[in-house]
Length: 252
Image (cartoon, rainbow, N blue to C red; front, side, top):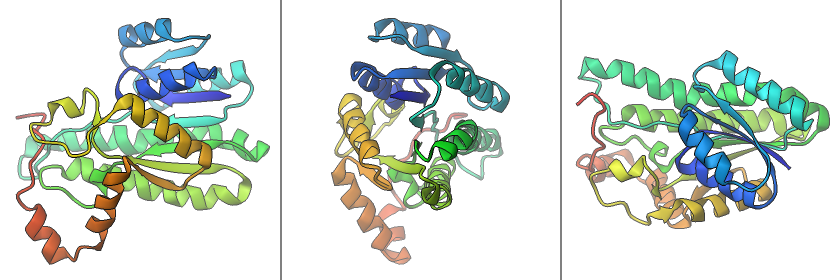
């Protein structure tokens, strides 16, 4: 099986790369940090393809995808796991650039990641595209307007894409992580319920992808929380969430 993964040098992307490599699959790995990516690839079993680039560079990302397709013939799974997070406040005008960066990386780069693979998958009537949303995208969180909105957008975009591609044999899976132990979450200055190791997350995510589940929250306990959040009326959600802990602003 051929698997293409963005954001592969750390966090969820790295954990997924390690899992799929251990299973004997051939990987196309994308990340910005050449040193981290080199260390990762040298530690993996098997032979893989490495692409050092910024996922916000659409042309470079498409070129990497085309090169990977040339080498492996066809791609079975594409995982758009590159993502960034930071606290944001609209009243702080310096945060506008942070909003742009988060949306560009989390949303638009997901689109750019999927684009080059769809034609081939449709022609074969097979293949799976995987978007990484978040429990933080279920409802807006204070101090996280950019991140919550971007992850909500990923989930809705992937739902639209699933409806477009399912009749043509291509699967779209949305995975919404809760708190996973990564470099991103280690900066959170607050308690994180149901915190899960990245390796455990990767194993459960791979099972979700193999099952072709349309949407899955991992861990399942956060799935229960997510369902409850959806059901709460606005007045009650506001009362419960208005004083929720906040992620530090990038520009603070």
